[in-house]
Image (cartoon, rainbow, N blue to C red; front, side, top):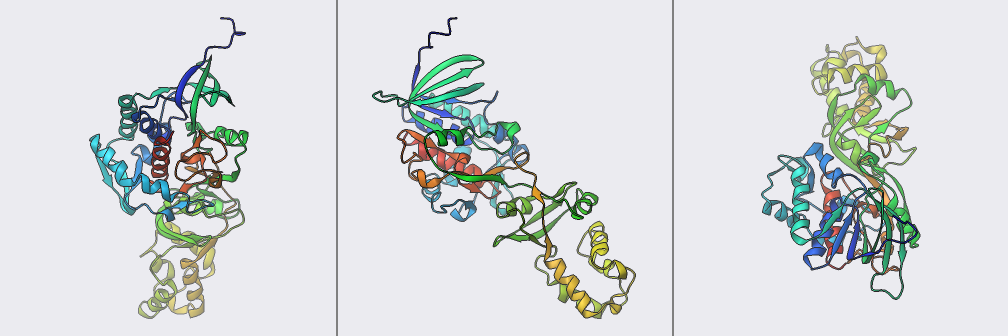
Length: 410
């Protein structure tokens, strides 16, 4: 083949970059309107992140979706899309496809069987609506064209073969930097930069904490132990499980609070949420004066954790009866149980992060259409934008809502 002759361009009304949650929903929404739609995916298969989410069961939305469940420099930006396509709209789609699902705690909805059901549903909708999907696609360049109905010209390789595409609407649904093994990449940010759109600084979100000080061996020794706690940082608090790992701390509560943490910040952990620990210890001293503190605490906390805390907080009195503790000392230990201050050295980063905080600045995007305000025909949806949901199905709901919103107008 003579590479000096450029391949003839194929024309589409809409080209969507990325066959994840937002891209697929946008694709069939647009195709149902009679638009000629093509989805380009870098990976070897579509919806990889959907497939691994929720332990393979996909926490696809939440019964209680509020703007307060989302983090963005502009907290109002998400409202319009979330109203236009609600959790009930997506649940209705799931039910129409006969997918069994269940509600778990905190109103989270999961597939009963497998996340594959959600991917199969999205692909079926794309097929019925006539949206095309191609995998193994590497976009090499995007150029604008003046005086042509097709505003954008895309040079790409599919399975190593060069290909030229043209479209009037280009949708960036490339996701973000989290979990690079599942196709996370920064190409969406590169496209935003190319067209002069501002970016909000990115960092890993919904991610475990690590320690470099004495807390690291402490956590290592308790690795695998989980307990319900309340954790607070940056003016937010979450009550959920925490899990000790060989690197530090994880679990739903920790992933949630990581979105509000910055390097150098302390996190406060209440090991006995709902219990005034100082009061309880002082009362127990009256009732069980001969008991040892460790024995009393193991009524409410795992023995292994109490042993470790003893070394930290009352190592010199491990065999002392409660009656011999001063009230002041018991109060201090109680306060520490309710407000244990820890200073993580870092998070585990994008390798294990479930989402990316920051992204394409929402001030440059229309909240009603997802179109770039200064670049006609260019749309951004899903995680590439500076909108991040809490843990619990909110990031998927943002993908569905933003994908649908763009799908109505592209």
